[in-house]
Image 1: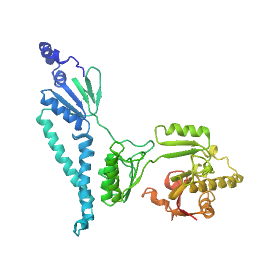
Image 2: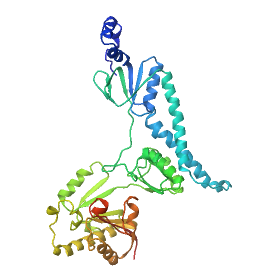
Image 3: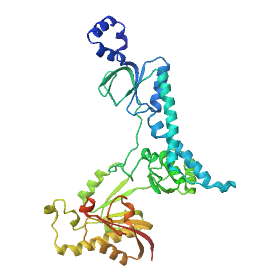
Image 4: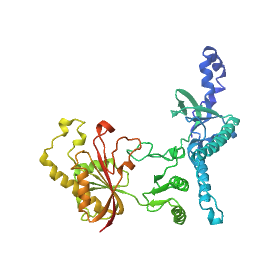
Length: 431
């Protein structure tokens, strides 16, 4: 790290400084107090450790932090509260297995108190860290920092001069493209303070953080499935260690879907290229093929998938609220060949999933022939045993007027969306 040369000029220019202070005392006083040997951006584990050591060596140090409290990800929403949660979960697991040690015991988690325990541990450590930083005479400057030239740091309009700057901004959870945080889609940050213990959870990622959450929620009573792209969990660790961890979690009811990937099928070459651009960098194989080629195309084997989503072509009746004059070009005579295509695509999807797999059929139309009739007729003609699942269960709980099930028809005037239809089918077995 290079110095800015500021420190060598302060003493030599003392008489000049006194003159400037006399004319503009307040402004210059702020500038003098904002000259540091080291400015650390971020107060997480790396940041505060560096700041404390620099202060111990006699440096004048400032920490810039935009959170209300010191500690960063590890202390506030990472390692520390997670370990507190795991301790509560371990106690629950011990109670559940107490008969293995000849003890009869029973209990249930009190989620409010579990979170109170997390908060207690975090508050205690934050208080200790804050006191230590204060004792070392480290200045804490609140706000977001921007690194400028020559060792200068801007904190929301306040300028800091530093001989050395340490960037310790840490990390945050990464969302998959197209997803946003909601009541049903969360990261490890939100999981720690979720309003209730979920009845079920799908965790994407089989690294340390994902498995910690899987362990905790499973011990607290949730049905947990972990999905990972790699063929084995904890890919950065020794294979024997990973196998031991996996066996322990599976014994406690955690399910694993390893080597998970997605195959996107698009019949039009130009649209397939658009899909490739949209999923670049993700574990997605884009296949330019007819979706009805299941069993005859090498990338579309029968029984080769756990889940299949059919985004069926339709008349477009469900999207007429958006520019109907340009969208509606159909004739009544178009319906028979279109519904035949819809049934063939749905039948191909049913053949593509393994026993126990699920098919989702969606189309942008409220027309019964394209929706309920297509689904019922396809099921009737299949050699496999197919069960209709209640699609209402996968939609937000506060979504009104979803009907009697098991399929769902959305409406613009009720749900503020296109008239989308959804059916979920589980393939049980082949007759």
